[in-house]
Image (cartoon, rainbow, N blue to C red):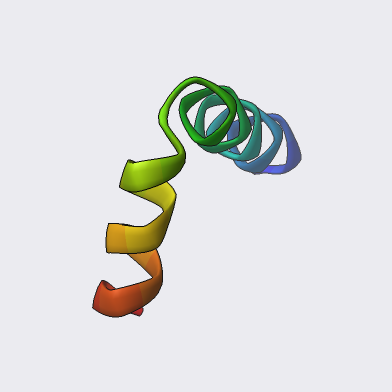
Length: 30
């Protein structure tokens, strides 16, 4: 489970770095 969580966080971080707008949308959803 730890590895899955790490992969998920890594993907999210990568997406946030490449698309800050997506990060803003995710904040609204959360």
